[in-house]
Length: 349
Image 1 (spheres, helix red, strand yellow):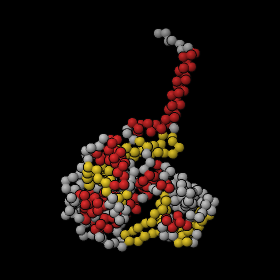
Image 2 (cartoon, one colour):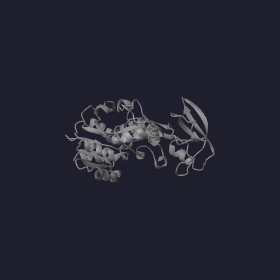
Image 3 (cartoon, one colour):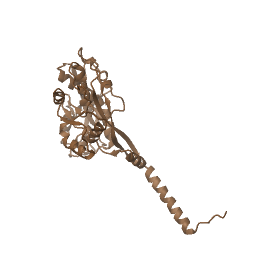
Image 4 (cartoon, one colour):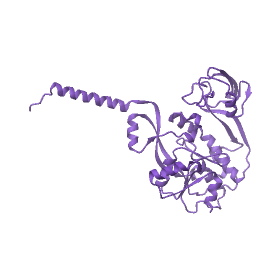
């Protein structure tokens, strides 16, 4: 059999095609400079295995609540190839700013947001329990810490000598009670200034000089760290009441978990009455519902799972209306609420 030889022109075309394919594969497989967090519609899970009201008092009881938490699926994308394949599976890149941070932090990377979401879980657990206690008039002694460093975003160079877990007690010898105190004291500082931050680290007091290297988007000096006051219940572990595994991130489960605790603390009142109820939203210590991110995907998830009623933060009605229009949702009842009392009143009709 005679093999036909390629002409010089054909060989050149062949080589060019091979080079193009190699470049294209290199482009697809090349790691991204900063990993991205992509999300897609997820599923719902019963909150019953996640809560236990019995440590809160004699009337706490483990019962079936028929309440469900709405999840979205997340994936950390590290290459353009992953972006391509996950895009085919319905994932998309989006920032979940409202779940985690103020407007001043809106240029966090998605990776920053994910790490911060996990760091906030212990604080969310306390707020869930406190909100249920407030509703049930349960008086439980609490202690509050000074601001504790819980996260250092990649974008900030300031505060690199501050470690997660540091409790900040003073700034330039001025006593500190909250992160607002720090923001107020830093208002007159600028880039290049040196401030002394006094912290408690491993039960020892340390004075740490910090050079201000950047300002936030409002033009104010910042320590470059995310801080929270830590509330603790005397003689009660939040982990005994709210059980969330390491895969959980963010604060959007706060509302429905608090509602579930209240149902367990009032077992004679059936809030669901046979209905399949899901909900999303953060929760404050006083029981107010906080806005969250990825709300459209959570509405879509609730619709796909055929829940009867879905609660969401009332302040995000426009986002829900947009999701209803975008995904043509008409099979579930969507209820915006401002606080736990509104949700309970609606269910008790």
